[in-house]
Image (cartoon, one colour):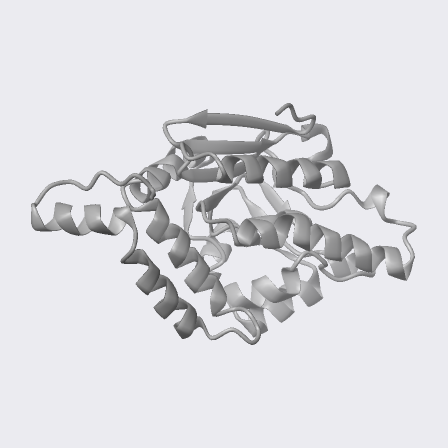
Length: 260
């Protein structure tokens, strides 16, 4: 597929999505959100792709926020619809993908940009990254899952402070908070992230997908995460990957997983 605002590359089992609106600091508009949905969907359904990395074009920003010009004059109903559609189309969609998604956060990740990074399965940041949810400074609140995912990652008190002050934190603070996993020099960000991806790719894609489902279940209302874990643990026993993994272990050789 051809995209106006994205660059898609695939190599050695890794699909990379680069948001390419540098003149707008890679801000999310409606078109970009739709393109991101389509790109993630295509990569997730490609059996050759084992890990997806998302980043922003340039050195200044991962995603500096939503494109405010698109919704500055929205009504109450239009605002609610914007949040609902965006969450379903992109943010919840990414979180639930069976293919691991890593955010390589370069530069600013603000508002919808931080919400996008938080919807990924985990995050790695360059040492110049800055993160925050500044929505209350515009008279609105985070609408793409920020009020839910940020407390899950950093705790209620820190999330309250970050959202209420509308301030930014640097990469080291974000790491200390548990918002990101690693901080690396910007020039090394993608290679470091690909190194993590290569470690993931040694393992069973089927098992990883089921682990994602089980972990996410703990954060859903009315869902018993332990029950989800039990069901998906059992399902693994019916896969070719389980047979290969256990046989390889017993035979003291490296497993050759097919993702089936």
